[in-house]
View 1 (cartoon, rainbow, N blue to C red):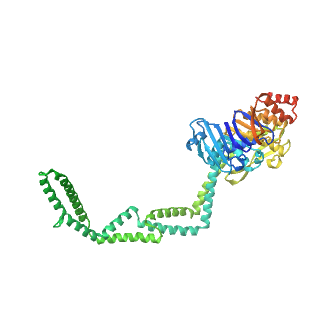
View 2: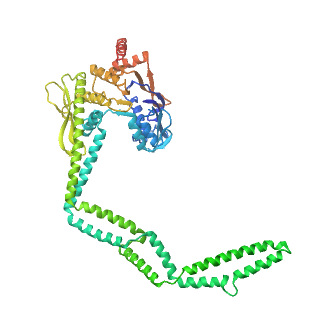
View 3: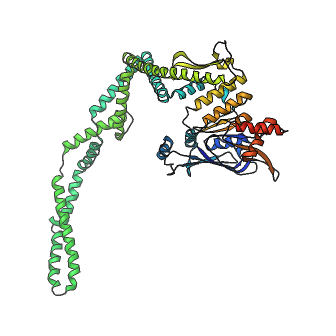
Amino acid sequence: MLRRLSIRDFVIVDRLELDFAAGFGTLTGETGAGKSILLDALSLALGERADAGVVRMGFEKADITAEFDLLPDGELAAWLAGQELDSGDDVLILRRVVDAAGRSKAWINGTPVTLVQLRTVGQWLADIHGQHAHHALLRAEIQRQLLDTHAGTGELVSEVAACWREWLRLADLRQAAERDTAAFAHERELLGWQVKELEELAFDLDEWGEINAEHGRLAHAADLLGGVGEVLDSLGEGEQAVCPALGHCVSRLSALETIDPALAEACVLIDAAAIQADEALHALRRYRDRLELDPGRLAEIERRIGAVMDVTRKYRTTPENLPALVAEWRTRRDMLETSADPERLAAAEGEARAAFDAVAGHLSIARSSAAAALSSEITKTMQSLAMVGGKFEVALVPCEPSVHGVENVEFQVAANPGQPLRSLAKVASGGELSRIGLAIQVMTSRDSATPTLIFDEVDVGIGGRVAEIVGQLLHRLGRDRQVLCVTHLPQVAACADWQWQIAKETRDGQTLSVVMPLEGAARVEEIARMLGGVNITDTTRQHAAEMLAGKTG
């Protein structure tokens, strides 16, 4: 749940440090006092888009930090660990800074993150139902999403979408094959020739390096033999060979060293040179013995090199790229062998259609069961919202197969007894829509895994006994979740476990928003203000006290 919210220089807020409690809490106050501003600040911390207008006039940046409780073994904790964003304890801290130019930065547990990462985390932490949420319920896709959430069919929905896309892909391939059979066949035949040519060439990169090195040796064998022979003469095979001369020098100095030990160092150095020269002499003799003039082998290698270069010129590539080129052609050829066979594709398309039908059928069954339960729950709730005899139904209307399955979801309502069920968008008045929408939101919020639920003036358009019922619904919802509600209705506020008053004050010529926790007489006074307006009487205060005393426990 939301534990703390820190706000700096946001719209008309200078500095606020708010500690939140569990259960059902309400934010109340005069219109324009800044009640929704607090929720806007929280929305920014949860990843909503920002602009320069949120920065308090005359200041460089707005800074919002939200602190939440974190279940150490939950999905969110696992996700944070996978992103290396975990803090190692049961606290999660989100921070968002927006500057006067509209640029923003975000942090999770002190680590800079992208807005996408922040928004992903936010979806685990809170559901925000805004003032226009009732109107969103008129959209077919929202109705379908609410039912699927209530049914817990997330995996089935994803599987249906995947099967649909695979079916569509194969259908497109089959149609293309039927349309372009001749072109595909020609391309496949051409690729077959090209692949065969390269396979017959049997090109290998390691072999290519070896034959080029061997070609260099054979092409210059005469020069190599001549040069090596000259060096051999100089080292040990000529009249003035170096190796025998060095050996003589060593023998002579060794004899003189017995007379004067100072010659020992020179003797050692010349001896080492003699050893090195002798080793070089043996290495060159071995090289000369291996090296031979072989015109036949040279011609064979030149034919091989010529064949490779002919192919590379033909296909405008390099020898090093030939393995990748033949692999690419094989892949394309294999794909065309399937793509150019309409019968095979039609069979695969049929299998994909069957897979889609099977999964879509499971989804339809799950939706049907959830639709019946949700219809009953919302119909029951409508009776307590001044719509006695009204009926609500989640209708599943068969449709052509689509990425969403084989039925459309339509919310239907009969607001009064004896009326036929019709689409929610066509029959609900503004007040009825508010009540039905609120019932839907409260019912479906039970399905949400998020620990914090926020309702921003969703009770607009209701009052009296209905408002009291709404307050009781939210209070019951607050037994399992943290529920925050911005409201103008005293009946709703009186049902809350705790209440804050949002007000404006002027300091140093600036209008600022302030938050005051209400308890005891202060809360009675605020409920009385909401009941009686400007002139608050003792009777109004007594009524307010009675409302607070009689709230749902």
